[in-house]
Length: 337
Image 1 (cartoon, one colour):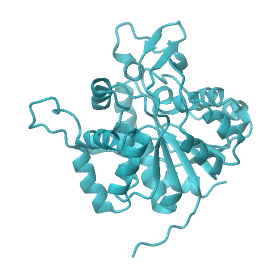
Image 2 (spheres, one colour; image 1 turned 180 degrees about the vertical axis):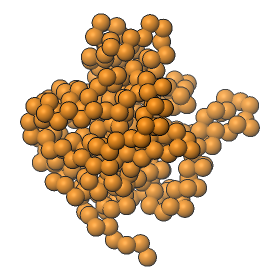
Image 3 (cartoon, helix red, strand yellow; image 1 turned 180 degrees about the horizontal axis):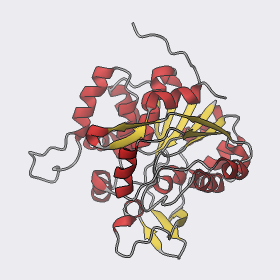
Image 4 (tube, one colour; image 1 turned 90 degrees about the vertical axis):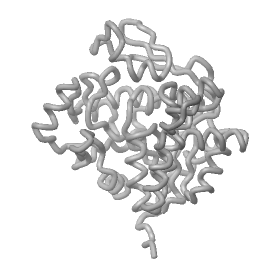
């Protein structure tokens, strides 16, 4: 018999893939999963998702697939589904080769049920997922970034990979992002925001996974008007090409700018455990540094923010991956506010 969760908070999360997965994977263990709503970005233009988007005219499925997987409550089901979703049909020789089976399942359900929102609902039913997983918008969007020197970067994938472009300058920061067409909100997202107890922005790529949610019509306004506590989970390390030399206050300055109200941020979740020298050296070799928590400037930038510090990072040596500890992160959110 599965124990009843300790918490029954109506939680709405915003994010992309990896960091969002970690957040949801923790929340589902302690909160009633039927009260969790994951809002997922749909402007990915790279990888398998980007190719399917371009060739089939569908909204990219990859980030939604990851969130569905995170919210599966049975560990064995999740293990098997992950192997299924991650399979890339390597033995195939046609156009399907290289695409993850999870993406293909999602795209096919979207086609059968006439839309990504209904297709995602069908996938939830298929895998018995009680949480809501909602596309942030049903509009086909192209994300553009503008740097401090006025350089325009067209497309989510190009922003994500700008470090690989000739002439890349780490100090030529991204100063602005925008969509090239109007981004209509998903009405179900607005409804979830209005009913939420807590709204959490997951860790992830700041300018391609997190902030674009606030560009969608009505989202920032609904958050500002809601009675929910608003959380921002700080990344563990810099993302080369997006957040080079960023401190905590830089993240928060960008976040409250797009949110539209610096007083509306209630909590910042920040790791304060120092990583071992071996880990630091590895990441420094990749031109990535741990995010510095400059508390005074952060509180000046968001005057109502409460900073929750703790051991939120874990290093997986076998795969060289530094990620958030999902359980510590979830409990910090659920025990606060």
